[in-house]
Image 1 (cartoon, rainbow, N blue to C red):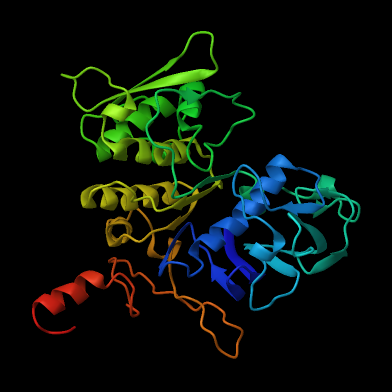
Image 2 (tube, rainbow, N blue to C red; image 1 turned 120 degrees about the horizontal axis):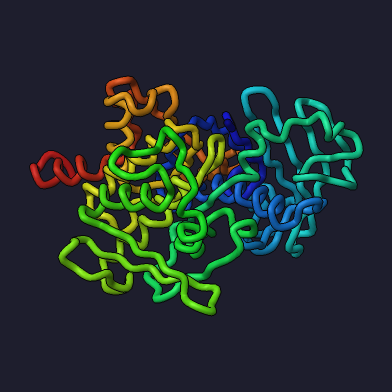
Length: 387
C-alpha cells in the first residue's frame, strides 16, 4: 500500500507531502490541486503500461493528457523539472523529471530508491533502472506495483451508449479513464471471482452477478443484461429496474446508472493492493445514493483495494463516516484532506492542505472554513444568524 505521495514543482504545488491510507478522501475548492494528485499517479501508470522500458515520462496517453511540460511544471517555480515521490511501508521511490517547456514528455534525470540514487538511468523497467539494480531480486509485487495495477476514473465519464467496445481482456485489464471499457470488462470477465471481502450474499461470487447485486443497492430492482453483438468487437448493455419491465437501452434509463456502473465494475474487478482513483463518484446520484457510494468505497478499501477519491459531496463523506462508525472500515484506515487554493506568498504559492481526522464513532475533529460547511452556512443565513 502507498503511504504517501510527494510532489515538488508539479502543477500548482511548490511542495506537497500527502499521507495516504487504504481510503483517502480529497476535498476542497475548485482548482486547488486535488486532481493534480490523481494525475501524478496516472502519469506514472500510463508510462508503465503504454511505454514499458521508456526513459521518459509520457505526459499524454490513454489515462491522462496534460499537454506540454510548461503545463505540468509549477508556474511559480518556472523551471523545467519536477519531482514525484511515492512511499510504501518499506521504501521511498523518487523520480526527478526534466524537459524543455515546449516538450510533450519529460526525461528521467534522477531516480532514488530507498535513498540510493541512480543518475541519468539509460535503461528502465517500469520507471526503475535495471543496469544498477538487481532486477531479479526486486519485489515488484510490493505496494509500488499497485501503480502498475491502477484504475483511474475521471469526472468526465462516458454517458449512455447503444454499444460499447469489446477489447482483448489481456490488453484491457482496466476500465479506461472515462469508463469506456467497463461494459466490455464486465462481459469478458463476468465469471471471474470477486475479492472475498467484497462478496455480498444473495448472488454467486462472480463479477457479473456481484456487480448486478451492488447496482441494486444504488438502484433498487436494477438488473443487467450484457450481450455480444455478432460479428463485431462490441457488446450491448440492457438495463431495467423492475422485473415487470423489459431490458432497455441505457439511454432510456436514469443517467446515474451508467455513471455508477464503471465505478462498481472497477471496484469488483480489482485485486488486493490494486489502486483505484475516482473523481467525483457522486455525479448524477441523489443524496441517498451518494451516501451509499461513500459506504461502498469504504467497503472496497476494507477488502484490500486502496482507494483515493475526490469529492465535493458531504453525502459521500458521511457515507464514509457511517462505514467507520459501523466498523466496516477502521478510522485509522481513512484519511481526509481539505485543499485550499495556492496562496501567493513568500513560500512560492504552495497549496495548503488541512487534514481533519476521524475517530471510531465517525466524528471529525476539525472543520476548517470551507470544509463541507455550506449547508450550515445557508441554514444560519435563513435563520438570520449570519450572512
